[in-house]
Image (cartoon, rainbow, N blue to C red; front, side, top):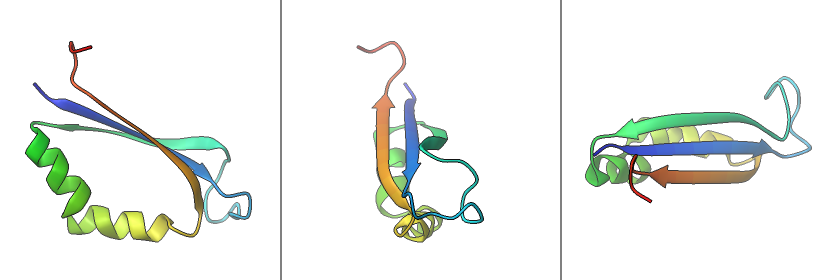
Length: 73
């Protein structure tokens, strides 16, 4: 079963309009992984993902993450 990974971002009040257009939890991503190992690699080792996360450190105030397997409760 695939794993659905949802991430929502809340930007710091000091974030400029040029840095991000919008505010609050205004941006999010939905990713789907074929396995837990694929998800783990993406979160912990994927160079592009790690670079992206590092680029947000000064402008993100809050992050919400939800991972689930469709059909499992």
